[in-house]
Image (cartoon, rainbow, N blue to C red; front, side, top):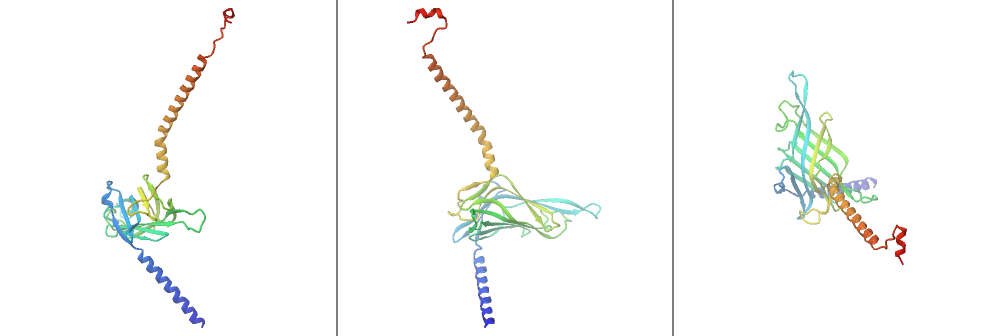
Length: 276
């Protein structure tokens, strides 16, 4: 009987696992590359749709610096080089949308490069949890691809990644916007080299999009907030100084008018005889 019970439990667990896998597979949705709509040639626009409506939108410019080696002139040593890889417009897109997790996969150059961004909502059971964020970034690259890597480079495919991140932390129900460049360091399987991802002109919302192809209210990054404050500071100081001058002139005018209406007492005692 125990054997039958264990078999039944195992069967139920397998059934539940299959249902979960089917649900995750069903979450792979139709994708659209809308980069042609951007006036900035370096900026890409991507959308993932589910059941006829948008479940993830992302706009950004991406550049990746990848260190590698080529043979030196003595054919014994290796010289360091650095590939500067730009995310192109003809990017292939894949994506997944779940209630608390979302993913954006971007591939180009016949899958020689793949950039993956993983989004996560805070655990709703935890107190003060009301944000979403990027919690993982992964970049795969093939050093044999010759557009960005020189001939003679060590061949091989490598993956640079970083986990347990808290990037672009944004209140749930809002989109994240940042014009400033954000730098993300990734550790590569190629001898632990540091690959650097630069994201700029970012506008992303991976959850709770209320209208198709329309971002929710923007949440500005701190760098943009400081920049906006710095730009407004001269105006604020100018207005404050102007108000201070007006107040001082008004007080002076009122004081002058009040003193002018007062009876002037002569300082020369000889004039007292003319009073009264």
